[in-house]
Each structure stands twice: as C-alpha cells, then as structure tokens.
Length: 107
Image (cartoon, rainbow, N blue to C red; front, side, top):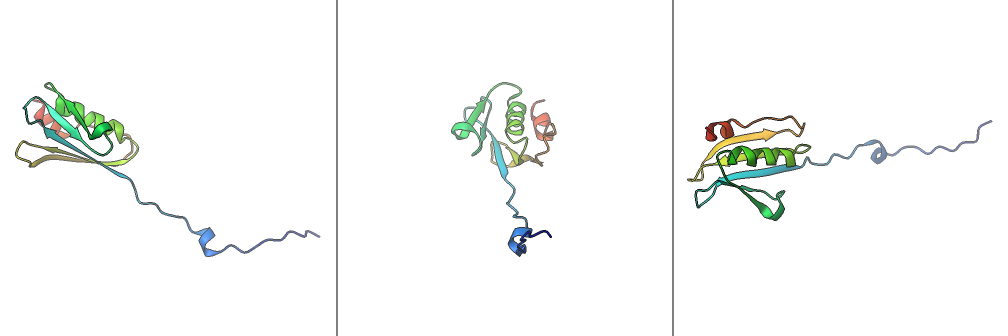
C-alpha cells in the first residue's frame, strides 16, 4: 500500500501570471545644426545617439532594431517641423527590415 500524501492544488497554483509586454520607443529627430539625426530613447546609453552622413536615418533605425530585436518596439521618424513622417512597429521576432521612411529619406 502506497502512503503518499498529496495536497490539493489551489487556484493560484494552476494559473499563469501574465506580465505586460515590454515596449521600447525610439525617436529619430533631425539635428538642429542640420548635420544628421539624433536617436532618442530610454534604451539608448546616455539617452541620445547622434548619426551623421547620408545614411544617418538608416543607421539610427538599424541600431534601434538591433537593440530591440527581442522586444516589441515603436520607431518614429520626425521631420524638422516635428511631424511624424514614418512609423514602424517591430514585434520582437528579430526579423530585419528597412523602414520605408528611412529608404525615402536616404535618397
């Protein structure tokens, strides 16, 4: 005869805990001196990175994608007037892409 003692499972033990998804937000703004763009985010070291040259927007977006490859992210590209000219929502599946706004601005 087996004398194992089993205790009943409570509702708390059978439920899974759902955590909210982490959403990274990146903003790409043109620099005030007209020499490239700034990438601004909480996830960027020191809060801001500056990019210069003809592919500055593309480089900033690629950096944001690399930093958020396993997290959901929103990348917004602004013009000098403060209007959003491109938005991309990345679902954290590490798929590579090039934002249509970055391709349009790099031409």
